[in-house]
Amino acid sequence: MTLKSVLRQNQCLARISMKLLGTAAMSCLAGLALAGQTSIPIKADSAEPAEVSSISTKQQIKIEKRTPAYWRVTFDNPPFNIFGPETIPQMEKVVAEIESDANLRVVVFDSDVPGFFLTHYNFTPPLAESTRLPSGPTTGLHPLPDMLVRISKSPVVSIALIRGRATGVGSELALASDMRFASREKAILSQWEVGAALVPGGGPMARLPRLMGRGRALEVLLGSDDIDGDLAEKYGYVNRSFDDDKLDPFVDALATRISGFDRQAIADTKRLVDFASLPSDPEIAAGWDAFITSVQRPAAQKNIGRLMDMGLQKEPDIEARLGHYTQTLADK
Image (cartoon, rainbow, N blue to C red; front, side, top):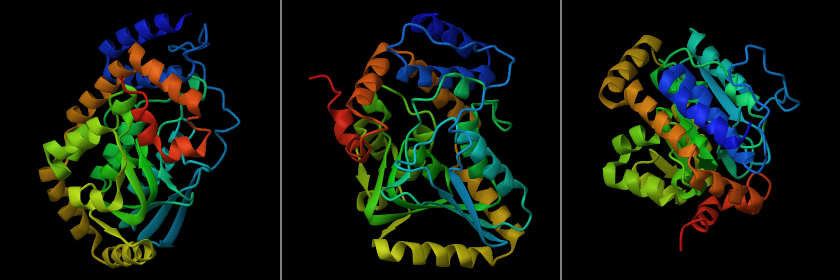
């Protein structure tokens, strides 16, 4: 089956149901990395269980339960903390545990990989590893945006401690968290997708305008450039930025303080703030739908292919300066 045939099938699937939207999206996304092949060995409607790849058993997320009420969730997938289909089942278990623990009040997301908080989606695994993932239980979307919605709506307070790159999925996780604190020297946030002819799929179009206003949100999204810690604070992308040596003590002290307060009071207060601030599920769904459409366009396939040829997911300089390299894709 040719890539064009698969993409035409995915266009049809996208019109059938929200559940299939998530499946089609990941099929298209993974297909970008395989655009140079003459065929794609995938049956999107197969009922057979997906084969477990050699990378799916690698533990990429660690939970440190500092107290019953305060956890650290740490991403540890060197060298770049890339998030892919192999990460999703692990993240799903983490989110489910956060939702179900009656003692938990605060969770902090951080990283053990120098230079990278969490980055973009993994373009290299076989298609089946993405297309066979079940839809999320809350929104019916692909499990990635579904998990982000669940983190936002959880009664547990979520804090993103950003040191290194928060690009694509990393930025979207930070935006879905209740609070964000960044290293002044080492944090870089970005939504790089438009620079590669994509539309971001994890909800930043719905969340960023609520944080920083329409104009600045469009600057971040359409500029597709790197935002350092100071500018992120000025724009409202993060709550505050700190000198790097002061970031961990501040976040730890805040998380410890909140974790000592009454759980029901925390949950009720957060729920009422959510009414005034969170995007609706249909807004997140609309962004995911736009993402699906964008990944099917030839321009996106071409640009991701060019980035992969440059060394995306392999060369440290490409990942560390993604804003620069996406600019090289622009029409002259």
